[in-house]
Length: 66
View 1: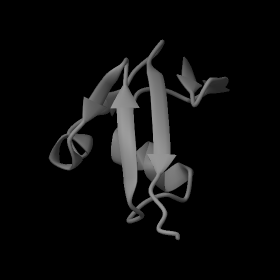
View 2: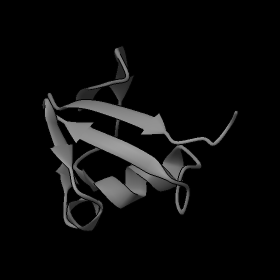
View 3: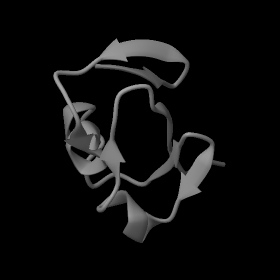
View 4: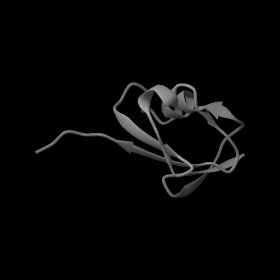
């Protein structure tokens, strides 16, 4: 299946949990903001979200700085 991840096309083997995608991207446990199909997900929604064919996913890692 094909999704758009941060503006780039990406092939995945099949539907997966959003948490599995974060694991695959080495972002598990890191502070991130996730948007799925132009809808921002609350942190508690990320655990229940599924990534499906055609989804448009934006993931932004939150970093501190000054």
